[in-house]
Length: 425
Image 1 (cartoon, rainbow, N blue to C red):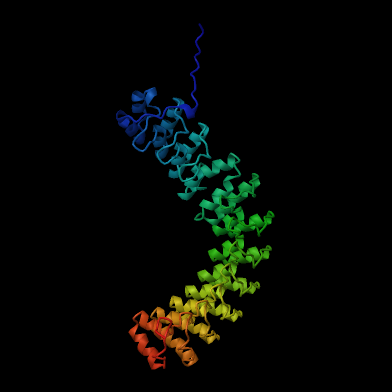
Image 2 (image 1 turned 120 degrees about the horizontal axis):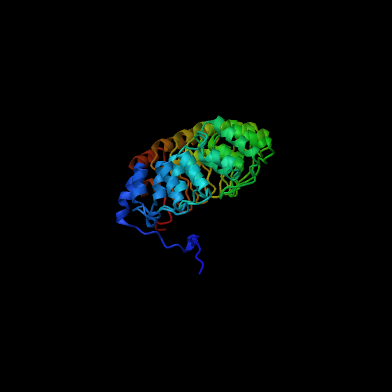
């Protein structure tokens, strides 16, 4: 009879789940402290893949602490690199998370997968970059990735290393591109490398990508171009770079949002100024028919509202609910925006789909200062305007119990005997 000296290898999918053994606590302590002699004396073959209370193996613990000699010893005994802990992380995840470059090298030599995903869908490189361990020295995971020619890592570097110095980010991008990085790769949200560079505020990388011929008008899943992202990030330098490279200034997302909409909603005056300089449509309407001025009015961005009006934004444009920017400002309680709109011929008598004027909304909100501003601008002309329920501002003031506004409206001549639809005829 012939006996094979080769140990039979059971596929990982068929391996029984490693046992949890209270007696292994001492072994884990030895590994955590880096006591290799003690480990060599006490370790048994059956202990190689024993789990602690966090479902970690000895290799996980050694990797997390960066104990290279112990890791090499465990791997020589057959420790598996693919075992995942309670969070779905391998030993390589733990080494990368802690920034132990030497441990990363040991595990990669031992066959650890750089592409393993944990329960959050993150690879070891994600954790290295998130914890600012990316590209710091020759032994980091990212450096090893470059040398291993993994071009797909380019998108992860950009997505997860926003806080790195610009010169380090740029040099890493150059290395990746030189090694043949696939610039057509996209994230799960369909962001391109250019989207990610703009998100990271990396103008030098964006310029590098554009110089390599990347299309500046490619869209992600939300149909946002890199210019939308630059507007969102309030990065004027990138706006100029993208526009000069051929970015469409009035590109729209799936919700018909332009870059100017994004800048206006967030009060990004510098970016809005650049977009307007490059002939952005100041009265463009999104899916809800809102103009950039609607969004600036809703958010109370006075300087931006003034800029849009100076660029000939229509102060009386109506959205799908027929609300004007003045309705929006009155409803949100932005007195300064109301004053700016009134000074630019905003109509106090404009009615929305419910027949409500800005005065109705200001009264409903109990905003005395805005009510005064609206009344003063038209000399009480619209004080008795009714909505579709036949209610005047005075009805609403009474309904909401705004005593001060009741007196104010009456003092300005509001009709005290006006009846609404709930009154007897």
